[in-house]
Length: 463
Image (cartoon, rainbow, N blue to C red; front, side):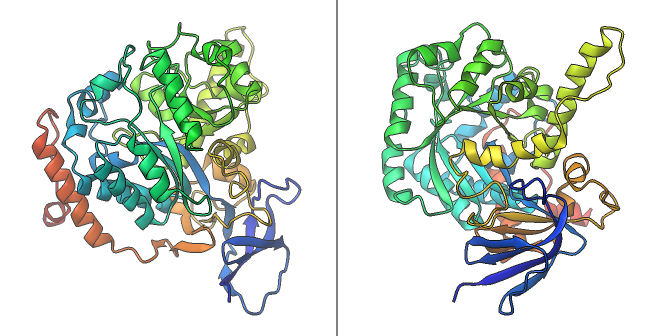
């Protein structure tokens, strides 16, 4: 018989039916799916999950994260984007990675995401070899996260690939990976292609890489329109003229596009991953959230890298909201007028982290909202914690006040992967030891990080 769970008496934000959002409801999960949402459900043979004192939300969707960097977190608190690229990609420590290193890095990074309420993530992976690809996928599989594995170019010798005149095509191994791991769409892991895009390789190469992604029926994601690399390239216009814009294209950052390009993105159903905290910290440019929402584009959120920030989407929701409101407020203040109405709203931002993210990754039929017939990816937040209690506006509380420490329970595809604040079936002490061993190896091979003094957990405890 299918396993049944009855999520009982939670304050539910479905993002499916606004009239129900914020009401006390029950959810019935049967096997993978949500079978019922409503008040006072009675299912005698279901395992009851007491959600009283909890806010229940759809699982969060991170559309842009380099997961492997979990093992070198916080090494770049003072790094600009160019410093980051120099250390990690162009002759940097990314080339030191062995398959076993990226396996544990992806496992640890995926568990970090789950622990903070992220149930779906696009892993923008740079892949040094077929063995590395297998290991990266293994890490995601063992974490039991829902993920898009976006196969990218090698970190080793990255300079040969990442240049405006590079005619190197995307690694052929992507075809093997598609056939071996992603022959079915009815699984937690799906296929993506992380391409360089028209601002980081030759134009013909970018078009060929997009064609390969479509051949493989894979989401095609690329960095575009940020820093000093893309403001005058008019890449979106050129891609439209080439007839290749479509819902399967995901653009990352897009800080410096022209106003008409945001409209073109929306017109063709493309998506954009905004990573507001990293963009403001490292020098990509100001987040374009408001421009995208104004045009009706599929606007999503991502953590990007944990070398400089924490790996949760609650922070990114607050950053996106604050940055856009600050931008608009300053325009009003410059006219000598106090702002009366604020830009964006909490519901829109939560949609960016859930429903819009699912749509961008081609998963809108499966996840992103708490609707009957969708797979049961959901998060229970402890509303009795100091930062959420008392709850007066549940949706506003989630966006403006919640954090990873409030995440009590997480379900992915109907299976509990976190209960009572603890990951389920995860040997954290063993994994931490593996993470430290990988961290120590990587930093022993790359000596370019001045001021970084790795500290083992054992030594820290003894100290």
